[in-house]
Length: 238
Image (cartoon, rainbow, N blue to C red; front, side, top):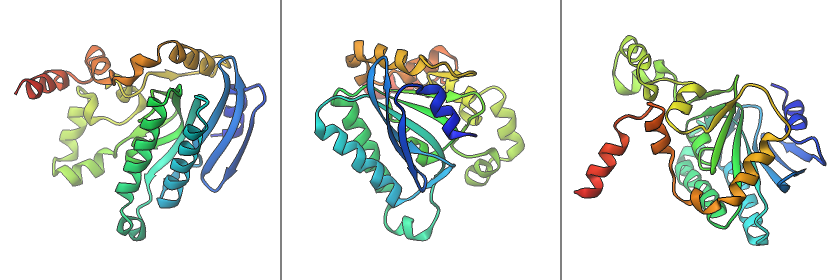
């Protein structure tokens, strides 16, 4: 997937960015005003360093108090599986990064995530899935884990998981299934230069509505999460 070509299609005006390692940082001009571009490329295995770098960029942006919109670029194979990162409590670092994105949201920054390539597990959740809205390119790969890995973890035969995945989006990888569950707002088959601007402008007009997560509602409406709301209501009443 050609990151440069995709960025030029999405941001045809005053696009400036740099890629260092797996991290992308940049700026562009849109109809919604100047935007900050931040995220990962080349199927990044997100480690302590990358997570803390992204978190630092977000905190610096919030500190400027200009409510600059942010577009998160998502292309990650998930968390780095090194023993060193696990011993350094990568899970807590991911929680910190997710908290920074939440602070960005609550500080009045319109924001969205675009999945360019892969969006896997904790690497996706820690910043991409935390955005106000998530969009995926049609050929992107979105999953928590593949069915073979899920079978090893759950001890459920992979044949049974394949059967379940035909009727339940929860058991199936893929952007379409994450759309059904409400995690993805839309899948973009072709890129239009005004899509990012339109999404950000709409957010800027209704920012308060994004402070309450409505994805479980969308998941029920799309028949991807049929029991979620019922269970939550029972827990709240208990």
